[in-house]
Amino acid sequence: MTRPLPYGRQVIDDDDIAAVVAALKSDTLTTGPAVTAFEAALGRVAAAPQAVVCSSGTAALHLAALALDLGPGDAVVVPSLTFLATANAARYVGAEVVFADVDPATGLMGPQHLEEALTRCGGLRPRAVFPVHLNGQCVHMAALAETARQHGLAIVEDSCHALGSWQELSGGWQPTGACGASDMAVFSFHPVKTVAMGEGGAITTRDARLAARLRSLRSHGMERDPTRFIQAGEAFDSDGCPNPWYYEMAAPGFNYRASDISCALGASQLGKLDRFVARRAELVAAYDAALAPLAPRVTPVHRVGHCQPAWHIQVALIDFAAGDVSRAQLMRALAQREIFTQVHYLPVHRQPYYRQRYPDVNLPGADAYYDRCLTLPLFVGMTGDEVGRVVEAVGEILG
Ligand SMILES: *Cc1c(COP(=O)(O)O)cnc(C)c1O
Image 1 (tube, rainbow, N blue to C red):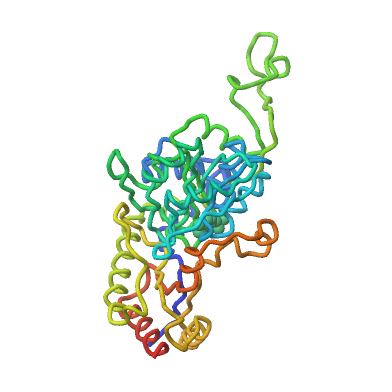
Image 2: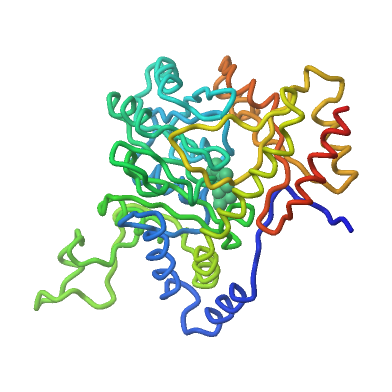
């Protein structure tokens, strides 16, 4: 019996459902203990002293850009091979995106791509770089950070693909989110990611000042800590005690909070991260073995040495130019067999909005990766036989 195979999907167990029901029956549906519990659990998993949960990975990127005070006249370097949101976050705050190229074999940006992008900033102030850990493999952060620091750039790791991936840094191996070579790391808990909240995201950091700003910005810019109040006359009673109703806002923020309901799901799922990552690794190893006979026409993405990846998606690089079956034809023929694939991603500099804003950007590495990539089904509930079914179908259709 065969079933439809999506390129990714969540697993929700009975204990996840029970955790959500418990949150629903509790006294607080938002800004309650499930939020703080999830933040504490994420901080432990990511080895980060500060974890700030919010409503999506996109909101997390926006908050990171706000907390760094990025704005008009600033340049943010973003690899073109990523999801829209990484670049859009810079635009939300009025900063300009300078797209960087990536390695065509991994889709990852390196220090040489950062250096090259920095030559294209024109009259803008280069302020930050948002490296992306594509597919679960990590950018070589030790090398990238060295270059970024030489140019005085802040670093925000887009880790939406890489919860559970470990990185080799100068101080040894660290989980993604520990921020050993960055200012902040951003996560998504969209159902297609390794851990699901429905919608949800988070930022981790070692910097308590940044964390305080992120917490304030995710909730309207409200400040409730009396030690940070600016308007003493409004804030304090004649006896010097803070007025019990008082909060203040120095700059407008957003409502980017995550509810206790979704945080309960996130915490329950996070407890299974090791199992999820291990199962994904088994399935990726099964793909590697099954795809080997199709080489060199079909190859896995090149593996980097400085990372123990938690695979987010299973990408095959296929030399479509070498045969007479196009990527669209392969995808359609696979879909007829109920095997659903996707392309991650059209390089973002080729989206109409960015083409119009930044014409004449030419990134051959991103284009070459895009030309060959195809995301095959990978999810924790998948079986080894289903990996075989996918690879057999790919081989047959390509001929
Ligand atoms: C999913 C994703 C995002 C956005 O996360 P949402 O939770 O969907 O808003 C940002 N960057 C990358 C690389 C992603 O994969």
